[in-house]
Amino acid sequence: MTNIASPKGFTANGAHVGVKKARRDLTLIASEIPAAAAGCFTRNIVKAAPVVFDEQIIKNSGKARGIVINSGNANACTGGQGMDDARAMASAFAGLLGAAAEEVFVCSTGVIGVPLPMDKIAAGIPETYKGMGNAESHGLAAVEGIMTTDTFAKTAGAAVTLGGVEVKLAGMAKGSGMIHPNMATMLAFVTTDAAISAALLQKALTDAVGVTFNMISVDGDTSTNDTILALANGMAGNPEIAGEGPDYAIFAEALRQVCESLAVDVARDGEGATKLFEVRVSGAASEDDARTIARAVTSSSLVKTAIFGADANMGRALCAMGYSGGNFDPAKVSVSFSSAAGRVEWMKDGNVASIDEDLAKRVLSEKELVIDIGLADGNFSAKAWGCDLTYEYVKINGDYRS
Image 1 (cartoon, rainbow, N blue to C red):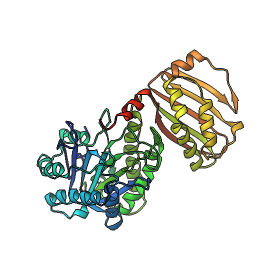
Image 2: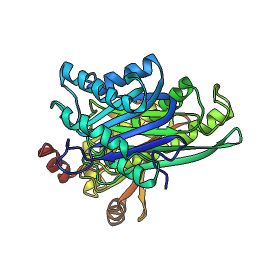
Image 3: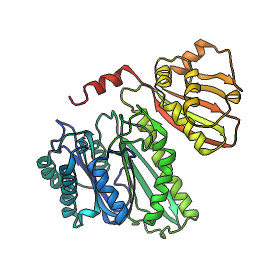
Image 4: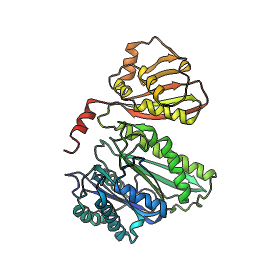
């Protein structure tokens, strides 16, 4: 099974060091040699200290040896002490790797506005480092160490041939609440043994995030800590990808697939969620219009609650489309929804159809469903993913700190 340490030259581990009461709360990822690095970060102007620290690494060097992550505490809204703590975490892991602090990324996730328990983290980093490896058990421990309210581990992988050489990509993510576009994830990490320049790795990652993590929504809240990092150490031995040729296209598509798998799992695991739904928009005048409309439907609280209640109230979807800011002609819209239980056409060319309410109830009662939105304005399309909004979401977030 693919894990974050499956590509050549990577190791990982996760452990419980005391940030949380019982579960694993610290994860380490390392590359044997310096790796090209890329990252995408939250667009919330209130940025956690680790985000500020990591953005500087991307800006200044685009190279890294490792990543240290804690869960249970976001190290956000913690002022100058938060920046000092982020650097201390990087320095502690860097010292073990024989690297500089500026070669180690730092990520944190959890409660906002509380200082990190640095005594526990400082003691836990060397202990966790001792157990690092590349077996499946190491990968599982690593992904468990980044989870907060997640109910399952989110991992993905791919293998492709570049220049006659097999290369691997592996990813893991955490995210369940505070999920909304720009970027719509909490934390995600991708490792690869492909040789690719840092500039092209950044382009591939940015493009992949645009159609995956930026196309999911759980609750409309964009986190202070959203981060996705990619490390490429080149140890597979393929000729370095330095231009946008065939090998770049193959790599970029593999990265997109890994990111989509992780992003969909984040939406599937939304806090309190019971259903995953995909919105497919086709026939838009531009790609921006298609994405804007799809995101608005997945983000609508009223659409989410209708899906929770298996209520075929697709007027809510049309309403969300109308305020989205995307351009379309309402008189030409077609809307249908489907699942393993069948398909229901709700609107055709701007006219509401007469639907079988019993069939609609069965279709919307499935755990996974699709809303198809057909426009008649052009040739562009987009996909977005969301989950239902349930009573349990309020319960989880009403007592999050306890």
